[in-house]
Image (cartoon, rainbow, N blue to C red; front, side, top):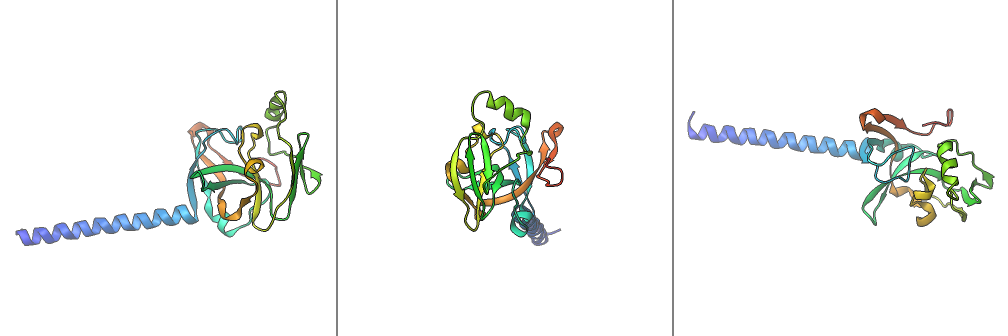
Length: 194
């Protein structure tokens, strides 16, 4: 094989390699923007539902093309900090939420928070209030009231106010690591369980 043919073959191989990288990049971008996004749990705001260090995938498709309902577990992007947060939807557009004396109210009615680990709530109440009081807030179009399941250690709507629909990145979490903690975390109205 002469030098000219060798040079052409090398260029053709490099071009094929670049095509493979471009196709892979497009596929990965499409998957992470429209299907699933990898997420790592940082902090204890959703404990014991989700634990610090767990790694999983969140459903991006459902946030973009389906409804987000009360008590769903969602991922939001906090642009100010450049961080992804995992929280639970407590109020949806049109709802009025408030908390008084450790009772969460939704549209004037106390909420049965069966999605919380009740033993953990009781343990934490021995140290003080589980859900700090906050005044009534009525959510406007495109606003969601989000709170962590570990209320005493969660930075959420009680501090930042309602989150915008545009900040929602994903819904539900499939925990894939650590392997012995694999689970699918979502709210089901039928069973009220993760």
